[in-house]
Amino acid sequence: LMNMKKKNLFTMLMATIALTFGTSSCSNDNDASFPVEGEKAMLSIQLDAPTLSRASGTVPTDAVGNYTVFITDKSTGDINTAWTTYNSTGTALTGDKALGVTTNAQHVYIVANAGDLSSITTLAALKAYKADLNGTGAQSSATNRWATGATASALSFTNSGDGEYKASTSVTLTFIAARITVTVDNAMTKYGEPGSLTLNSIAVLNARGESLLFPSSGSSLIPSAYTGGKKFYTGYDKPSGETWSFWPTAGTYTVAAARFLDALNLAAPSTTYYYYVFENDATTANASPTIVTLTGKDKDGKNLYWPVHLASYEQWKAGSGSVSSITRGKSYNINIRLTGDATKGGGGTTDPTDPVVNGTVEVSVTTPEWTPVVLNKEF
Image (tube, rainbow, N blue to C red; front, side, top):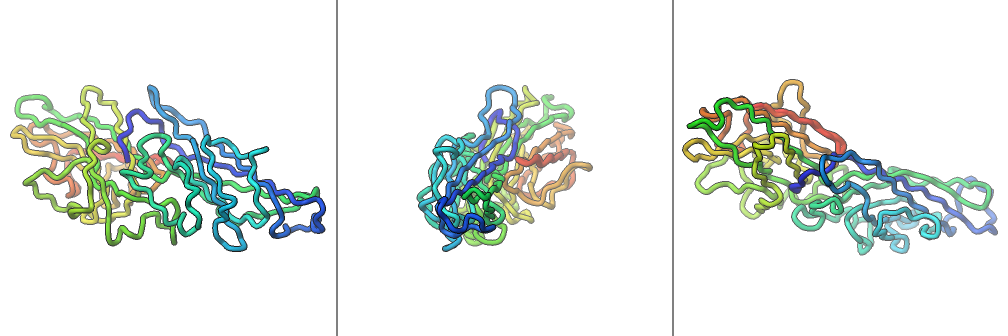
């Protein structure tokens, strides 16, 4: 979503939850192969984040800085608020910090780097909770890169024979946002000569504005409100007087140039530009797909664009990856190579919302977890 300079490479957070449940020694069921419901138990939680690769220079870490744990009770199927806890340091809840629960504990949900969300008291509310790209969950710093995960199946307990019921499970946390990295290779002929165009900036258009922590139903993480009231953020407003094929209707987008617009630094061609966005499942150009575009001007000052549509219809360089939609937890690593004649438009277009399927710009993409999706396109 956000413009993040010199950030680390994308990666998934892995959270391992080790659970140890102990019952009273006077229980008559200590030898049973199944737990007695409602017995007192202790829950220990250990979160382990992997060592991350680092970009050059000083960069923040994509680590667990804090997290809220929600645990459901199988007797109600809902969150047991007595077991909800917030950890502000990202450290393990083990030893004397272990949580007191009962053997009714069924599922574990974790939300990392989002601050204290213990005010959420029901599973329905947790699944309906939305992060806003320009506000709550803005992902503008390492500590704001929200990640979520839940147990895939109900906790299963076994009696260790010493009066304790034990279970272990693991939860994989994935970032709510997707990450876009952009590099530009300006190999245009005659660039800088009299009558040539100029390259000015990189902008992200149609960054979808909201995401859910967890699916409310099915597997979609895009709020259902999008069917009737979509919200987008964009780094580049449509210039007055220009006619573009498609553009979000009034009231559905907000210009957020500071987060989605960068001046292009041609003096340092290896510069990487970083942005964070939420899911976007647009499959047609008129459905407002997320677009990364170079901007420039021809010799007469007319605006030119070199757009890359992150959608299934985009024409990628042969041998490049492909992308059907923007998906959370993935990194879309885009390389734009310009090979046209800078005195003849350089393969640019006057409408970034109209996909360029032919030209002399090559774009490649890769997707890691923060899956790199490497995309290449040549103009």
